[in-house]
Image (cartoon, rainbow, N blue to C red; front, side):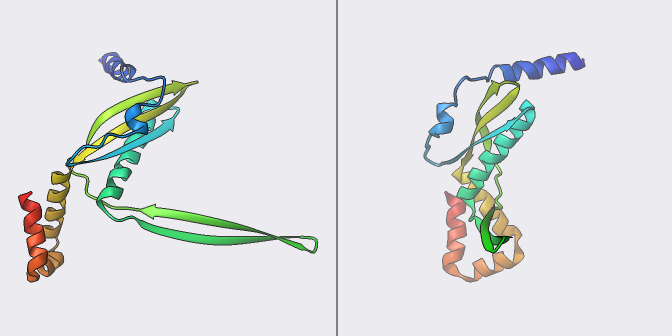
Amino acid sequence: MLFLLVMISTLTYSQNFVKTTPKWYTNPPKERGKIIGVGSGSSADIEVAESKAIMNAKVQLAKQVEPVIRKTYTKIDSVAKGDKIIAEKVTVVTEAVKAELNGSVIVEKAFKRKKGHYTAYVLVKMDVKDMKKSFVEKVRNDEYLAKKLTKKGSSRSLVDDLELD
């Protein structure tokens, strides 16, 4: 039984191997009413490469849905050599984004193999209507935010408009 499962898994991956980077990855399609993200990931393990690619594609989606919080830290290391001071500046940039991606689906997937190392490519798509539903649900489930939006006519109509689309 285990042999059969491994064989099915291998067959699934073997159908998606490519020699060059897919065109849909280098030039993602645009589709009305959809947001699209592409991602890639590399590893000696094909499943890890795929997981990384999916995560990177979903990060692209999330950046289109919610604002990105960016923090920059600068650290200056100084090294003295004799009577000369050598300074090296190091800048670290971190980004964080949190978004609900309910309704996102993997549309394309491809793999490249080179010397036992795998690179996975993934294209993920999400319907804008699903994104709007997720936003409305988030607002309705947050008691404080729901009260604030209900008090203001224009904000309440914004939520109502999102539900009607």
